[in-house]
Image 1 (spheres, rainbow, N blue to C red):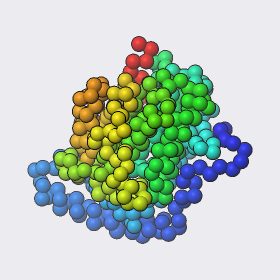
Image 2: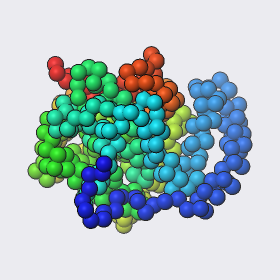
Image 3: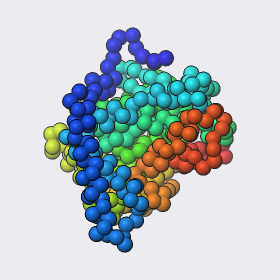
Image 4: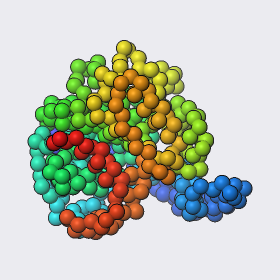
Length: 392
């Protein structure tokens, strides 16, 4: 059931649908690119015969994604957006078809749009204000794509793990506007309204709220927290949880950008182009106070005051953003902030979502209460981070 107002309210991005011409470009232009990418990868690996650090098929897959993501004239952004927004497989799955009463419930209000990914453990509805933890999820996608449904199975599994440990968990995911259609700080304003919704309309104590984000969503999470003092709003005291945070929108070329260029999903140049599209006029890019969180905070803010006690970050060993994430950890620790940073050996950008894709089908086919050993390691990583210290 949708939590909404009687009058019509248009959700962010509702009018941004793929055109027939976008699908035609996909069908006509992408197939000829595949053999070209294959040859490029083969030649590069031949030149670096003794230096190839990842298997050929993985290299080919990562290269294909990077190249298509970097060329929207071949693989339109509208299609990228549409591929991550369909939760139908979750609802139809054996695991959730009889336990869907409290999952993926839309919220559409004048200032807030999003989804309750879960209100308590799947199949066991609990009012979020009565839960031990309420996660506020800000999705990634370089501010230009992504959707709360993309990692729906991940958050449902986290809620299941919480229940197995005697902890009740709800998760609200914000729908915010894509760039370049909407410029910053639209996304920050929407994130603030979503946080107010949890505090004031759902009457959830800030002690229970944890903010979680991946990539650009993690950047938006930090934008939110650094804005709360000026708004007179309490910070989320349960913690902040950042998966592969995109901290520097300038995309400064650090050693990991070069070292991991062919080992990650993220192409640095495309990321920088999308960052520039977030701002208008162009001068707004350089004067944005949230442009680079590895730079000193402005306005007298201090990380020790802005952040909750629980700060967790994760990164992949093979991601281009690794060095800025490690640098940010050092900045926080230097000012007395205790940070848990987990670096996944061989992991790519937002490795939790990437690695768990292969397990999602098995997970959804498994009946409630069962799951083969060793699956969904990314979910387990997130759950361990979020649930640490609860009821201790």
